[in-house]
Structure formats: C-alpha cells, structure tokens
Image 1 (cartoon, helix red, strand yellow):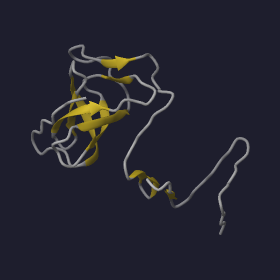
Image 2 (cartoon, one colour; image 1 turned 90 degrees about the horizontal axis):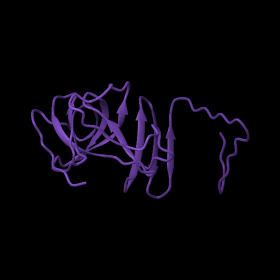
Image 3 (cartoon, one colour; image 1 turned 45 degrees about the horizontal axis):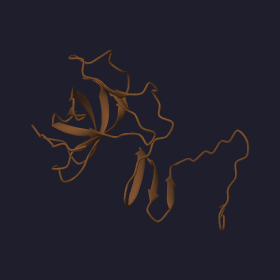
Length: 153
C-alpha cells in the first residue's frame, strides 16, 4: 500500500509500540495515536492466508515504526478486547475467520520475539536462538531432538 507518515507531537520512536486506532481510511491505511502521543498513518500487515484485520476506531494495536520516520508504520495486530464498532462506521475487514490459518512475518536479517529475560531469534543463516532462564518442552506424543550432532549438558 502507498501511504505517507503524518507525524504530530513527539512522534513514535522506531521499533514496536502500543497505540490506539484513531481512524480507518477508505484507502486501507489507518491513523494511530501512540501511547507517547505521536500520530502516524500506518499500513496493515496482511496475513499470508489473505484477509485483513478487522479494525475499529478505539482498538488497541501493536505497531512497528521503522527508522527513518519517513516510512509508514505497520500495524501488526490487535491487543485486548474489541470495541463494538467504529465511531463513524469505518471498518477494515475481509473474511469471517478471526484467526488466520497461517501468519507470515518476514525480515531480511533477523526476527526476534522478546519478553522479559526470554527471547527467540531467527537469523538469515538459518540459526535459531532460544534464550530463557528456564526452558520447558512438552509433547503430547513424541518429542524428538535431531541434528548433525546433539549436545546435552
């Protein structure tokens, strides 16, 4: 989608942040207000299986704001309870399933999910790093560990 960034106030820092949907536009872009008070027009991440997020004004969302700030932000998903409907009836939706069958998040060099002291990083060379203070693996059937070599302890 082609969109421009409209920064007002302090503007968002680059990286992920929480925000509130201020407006859903007919062209598919969404204006958000970050928790820091900045306003940004964003594109919406489309799941690999197709369809779009069902967004309403007032929804809480997780966004990614790239550096430099001249690029549009990207809404990655909705956080928490949903509102009953937008104030002016604008909705961005396609399909009826709430959860996509497949979700693709893509990055050129690496992708990291981090919460507190734990993280999962996937690198472009195929290396996957899982870090945490305590790792647990549960399997309903077989739990298999395979590799060219496997080191335990």
